[in-house]
Structure formats: structure tokens, C-alpha cells
Image (cartoon, rainbow, N blue to C red; front, side, top):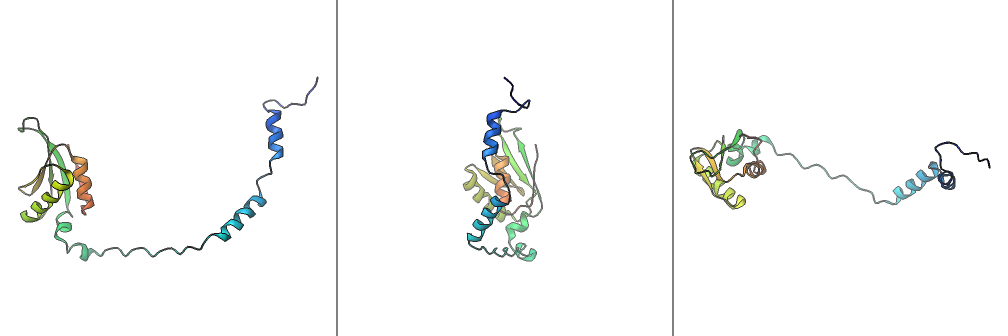
Length: 143
């Protein structure tokens, strides 16, 4: 019994490969006909970027424009962790209003102390995300 088999090839796979139509111009012509039936799409104009002078009009954006360093401390607090955000340049009233907003968003106590925000708990990443959402450009996570 002699078969003309090539090594490494399955005869059943070869038969099924021969029965399938070859990929070529016919398949692409079908795609072209489908593309002509698609509705035309117009690309929307990109939203105008806010000008730098408009962004500086907001006191909060101005306060968050510098480098903000977020660091964790637990020394002298009975093992409790407190996260500080330093580098927010703004009046104390602005820091207190920001602390109130963050207190509601983070669900923990946030205080404005000596030009910094003190957040009770190890919430460094959540605090950084909240500040970036409010317009902070450079937030650095410290220790």
C-alpha cells in the first residue's frame, strides 16, 4: 500500500483546505460592497481647548497649578496614618472649602493645616486622583 503522503501534513486537513475558497479579490469585493452601505459619518470638530488665561481665572486652578507633594505620616499619632498634600498655593479659605469637598468625596476627615491638606487614613492614590480631577497638573506621591 503506497500513499503519496508528504511528511507533516494531514490528508484530511489538505482536503478541507482545498474545498475552501481562496482569500482574494472576491472577498475584498464583498467588503467594498458592504462599506458602500454604511452611513456616512462626519467627524465632529474637536472642542476648543480652554485658553490659559481662562484657566487662571479660577482661584482653585491657580492654587493647584504648582507641584503638589502627597506624603504619608504616622509618627506621633498612635499608629494612625495621615496623608498630607503640600504645595497648594491659595488662601486659607480656599483650602478649607477644598477640604470640605474632599471630605465629602473621600468619606473621611480632611483638614486644612498651615497651607496643607491633612487626610485621615492611607488614601494617597484617591487623594491624588481627586486633585487631578480638579485641575492639578503635577501631583507627586511621596513616601
